[in-house]
Length: 85
Image 1 (tube, one colour):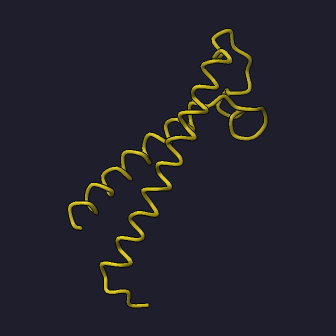
Image 2 (image 1 turned 45 degrees about the vertical axis):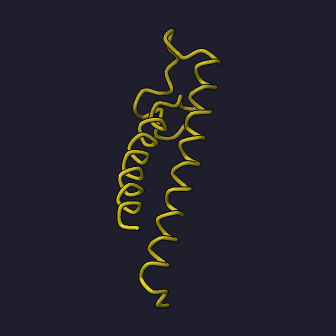
């Protein structure tokens, strides 16, 4: 179980960093912090609809993977510590 726990922890770190990066790549919807950093300005280099949809899909899949890894780590930690609650 120790090897599985280490693999899941490494996977959690990688998915956390990638998820943060993907969320920051999303186009701002106007208002809020995105305007403060220049996201509210219209640009000729804005992503196309297909690219934005693919980014959304990849972010959702990575978010679900991150959630499964969190649950897996929680279950491993719960059941390997003897179940003291």
